[in-house]
Length: 277
Length: 277
Image (cartoon, rainbow over all chains, first blue to last red; front, side, top):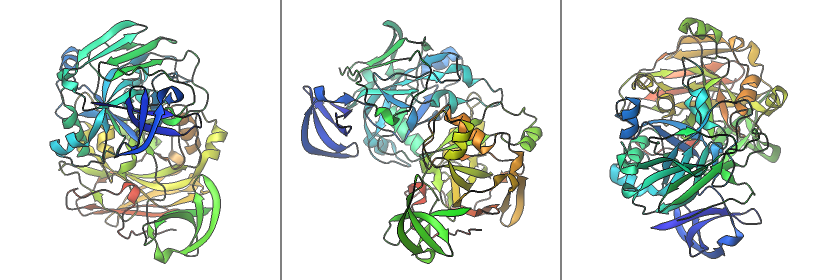
């Protein structure tokens, strides 16, 4: 297992690499496992989202326990929507309430698959090989919009707002997801605690099946879907999603409405918290 | 009115610029209206999709005539899904039938709005100013997948396949969409012919409202939705979408199933047809 992070130096430059003993060993990038030779102290760097996906493919109804609770059949193919690149923020960055939306905003703690190489029509083995590693996702949703229009469920809109895809704090390669659990805490109170081996489509199955539809690029993320226990985030509340072995993804719902300019993929300058297990 | 194209030189380099009398006057890019001074003959260049969007926001039910036919109320906010960057191809490139889908594939001729500058929470005036120009979209859809799952309409999947977003042949800035019509021909037979002034949300309203949700970046495209007359494309059939003043977007549904590697944003080397009005 290796832990990978993406961070910003004081001069605004972005570095990516393997984290060891408080130092970042810089690499060319996700898709080029070539060390640059540079070794930087994490203390001088501000954590960002651990990758900058061109798109995030987010699954719905991918856990047996949730399907049972929703009384829906388990799907025969991954059911997904697309969250845009601009929705991604890193751990510690604020989720922003859309200026014109006063309704319910919910958290969904999830495992995230990070793609390491372009794949299309991938076999299961090719799919497994195309997975760079795993991260944590909070698939934030403006729940009040999903059914606002009776004829068109607004999945992309409800889940696609800027800052509604919290990613991080790190990517762990060689991570054994089968024995891991997703634990979500709202202001410190546990709200989700579910086993990843309850997944309907395994990560390799997701990558293989989705790659039959659309080309997955290095850095793209598949959010594996959530299970029981999703709930509403009050303004100012903090959501922590923890997967032992990856770390804790922590984001608060900013109390003031969304307003100022946005930094794609969490390239913001504000220092971010990142607890790496 | 100026006409803009994106093309590939024989050495594989991509150029963007203003087209005049068979020549391309190269510019730095969509978001930097700076001529490089280079002037190239179109005869030496292969047309590509006129921009390389990071995302395509595709509207549903945005024409009064279609809403009436569908017996659906006109929406109060643009209803949209997201088509990924990898779905984009240029005029003349083949639409590829997904390997594992034998069902109905339909054409939807549409106006495309090309974003020229990053915008977020844009006023109507800012939105108008953020529109670089207009292009033509064939919003290809695997219709059989939309309702395949009874609990989750698969809009992103049905419209998100590689090659399912035909764009081009050109972008026209200063284009008067209000007086224009979209004409779609299937193997030369007219199937759609509708006026753009029947739109529910005008382009500026679309950009302004959608920018309240998610940040629009230069090169992003909003597909304005289609109206009456959409239909099925037989394998091998050619769809031409024509908007007088912009040109004709022509794409055939490849008869052999989707297989080989994909060139994002139509950066393929095969020479493409591009009829610019």
